[in-house]
Length: 210
Ligand SMILES: [Zn+2]
Image 1 (spheres, helix red, strand yellow):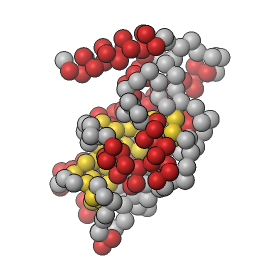
Image 2 (cartoon, rainbow, N blue to C red):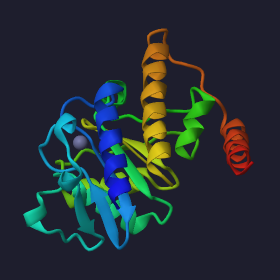
Image 3 (tube, helix red, strand yellow):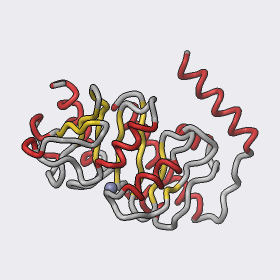
C-alpha cells in the first residue's frame, strides 16, 4: 500500500507540474482492497505525505482520524462500484477541457484520437454541485461505454486500469480539448463518420492487445 500512496502523491504533483490542475483542485484515486485510496481534502499537492492519502471503503466509510478524503470522493466511489475495469481515476480542472465543458458540450469525432476515451465522442456530464450523488449520477451517464468525460462547468475525469494510464488519458483529453477549441476558431470542423470511428476504435483495441 505504501507504493500506491507514493504513486498517488507523485501523480498529484504532476497535476500541478503538467498544468492539468492548479494548487488543490482535481483529485486522484486508485482502487485498493475493498475500497480506494484518494487524495485528501484541502491540502496542496506539494505538501502531501503518505499518511495524508485517505482510504475510503466501497460503501463510503472512512476513518476521520486519518483526515478527510477529497470533497469529491463520492464520484470516485460510484465509478469504482459501477465500472469493474476502473482501477485508477484522475479528475482535473484542466483549462481546455473545462473551457469546452463550460459550454455544456462534449467533443465530437473531429479527430480520430477522440476514440481514446472509448467511443466515437467524449460526452459532457450535466452540471450538479460538486460532491453530490446527483453529480455522480450525471458522470456515470456520460461515462457509459467510455473511460473519460467532461463535466459541465467543472472539468474532466478519466479512469483506466492503472494510474499511469488514467493520467495519460486525462492529458489526452486536455490535448484533444485544446485542438477542438483551436479548430473551432476556423469555423465548424469537419467530423469523421461513425463508420470510420468504429474502425478506429476496433484498431485501438487490437493495438492495445498487441
Ligand atoms: Zn472537481
